[in-house]
Image (cartoon, rainbow, N blue to C red; front, side):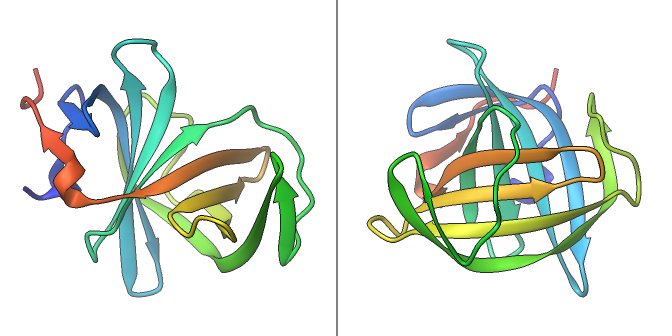
Length: 151
């Protein structure tokens, strides 16, 4: 199963919850890249992102309300302490499906690990006109199942 090649409208299950792929965006940074899928939970319509790196590491993020946030090395978010472990600048190489991004758009991203649970990640993306905040967790490949090809 190659998670870098999923398609729009395809259904997948992550930890026994079914999602539909809404869009797909390929980001690159220097010599590396990753794919970000926007997912819709079939049961409650909540929106998520599934980031898949070329190393096969995958993270499922729940999209939170967009808001301003103070970027620091360490921060408290929703009563948990997080510390910065990665930051960088991604550029959109390709995309498909309904999305509000364009080719070559750039995003500054900041990834924070929860001090109490290293599987839990706070993601902050600063776009030119907005800041997106998501809370996520690392997902084992064994917890992801492809259900159908695109319709």
